[in-house]
Length: 396
Image (cartoon, rainbow, N blue to C red; front, side):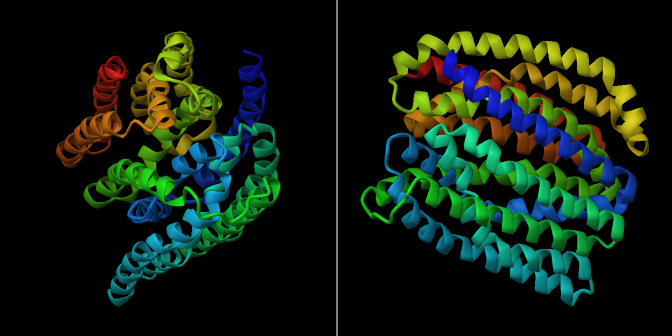
């Protein structure tokens, strides 16, 4: 409990800071950029997430596990392999960029060009968070993220005040995140005196590839709703959907704080030992999530009226999405899978939950647009939670 309180203090502090700065950025986007431009901006970021998923995106989980069990010197070797596996994704982004430029769309062409240039580096530099989580050093992670996040968000807000050009805003986004990710990765290497040792690299990469297969599916599906909404309904619907979902993602992140706290502890325990504490953690997260969800549903109309009057039509969708907070205890089971490297059960649960999400969105978004995406999330979350509960019972 002392460990949880100390660790959660820094994670909660980081979350509060993130919500505060994120709220400023959200307010800036809501009031300084029209919905069509914002929808286009979000579409490019969704493309970045989808294309980036085609590389070894699961290496973060493998790095965190390596750090937790004292194998940090595998990281430079993993970084080199990760970079090479990112080059095909960059080539795909470059090819799509050329196609958009050829067809006269400078914004999307320029956005894809930025993705092509930054993807190989961002995938590597993004490992820094996993390094600190694996070591359980949440204080340093918090203190390191303060200036990085503040500078990136300040740059974006300044750009929004100075221009309404989506391409310029995208350049500021990618460049600022590149600098922040690079500085964090270099600091992590110095902080933990990480050397270049090829021992255990192959084993860690193998595990990372398994996570990447599952992560690729999850990441592509995680952006599928935005891609479908942009194509079938348009950028304004995507912008409205983004604002309906944004508060719920922040609320989920509060309960997600417990995940990095538990991970380093579970990585060294057996399934039996993990199951001694998991039920209590699930009950605690459930009670808190239900309370937070009910409060948000009651407050949502007033929050949108005050802060996002341009997106008042997103209130009902956001209230429906808040119902999904009751499924947050499933995160404990997912952490158990990652900590113990249980690939088989992870494959099963990912396939079922993400497969359901894809089918629901493909059918429901073309028919019902924004609300089709919303109900698709809620139903898929319920299916995913039931599948994870079954998998929890199978763990031995």
